[in-house]
Length: 359
Ligand code: F1P
Image: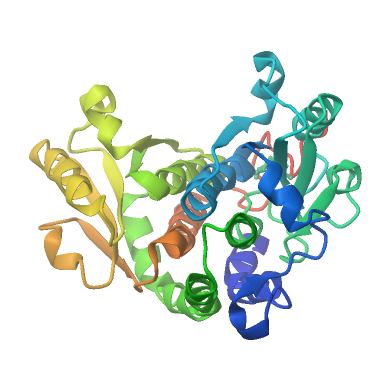
């Protein structure tokens, strides 16, 4: 399958997205197509990120990165909703359009609307010279290479990396990141391909987990903070290719509704990174266990003992919190992939879906 090949291409795709952008002793990043100088990057008082599907999930993660590292407010919108909001765009707004194909109709329409209101537009695209890239003021290309499988994998993780680079660039220009911190953050980024390779080594283990849970009719995915978008993405991947109903939720929202769904039939995927959310996530996990839900936990190495008993445990290497969403994405992709293969669905060309939605 193309999808599996593309999952395995991620270490290389990410190395290519980073290459040439981190130079000079790592204290700065260079985004060649950005077309905005430091002075302009300081002028923005608001960023909008607009995208569809998986690219929207990347945008939700980007909000965490940019607000944390550059201290500027970021709003994230689904492109098909953007037009109904009479969005508050001025010449001090930077609009970031994320699109693998660069041809998604709703994202293109949002770009045109935002530019019409005087905003500056920056595209994060994989396809060179695509419509969204061409019509934007600047563009950061993800160097993922062609993505054939309809379910986005390497495009997503390279989008996360592009947003990370952009957050560093904004943080340097706006003075919220000093050179030393930038060096630390870029050096962590350079370790990412190797750590993804380590996660890919879990493939057989994840395949076995998929076999155990493939007959479930529903899945719930839970995460907090910067892992919430990864919960959404995990659920979307499973829905898209295996046709199993799945929901991603912020773990803290569970008690406001989804908790009613939990019984011994329901697998619940918990994202358990080593960060300040972990204690709360573990208490949500205990609530699921108390109701006989089946727990699949993805945890950062070293934190396993905090979780108590789980039905399946996937351990990923430790990394700085800003990059943990990338590592956690890989088991989400592999789990969806193997469940779909066991179910015998058409993984690369799922029913009803198009690689890019241009109408
Ligand atoms: C957006 C998207 C993809 C999804 C599917 C339909 O595409 O929602 O994320 O996997 O292929 O389109 P794009 O704007 O990122 O090209």
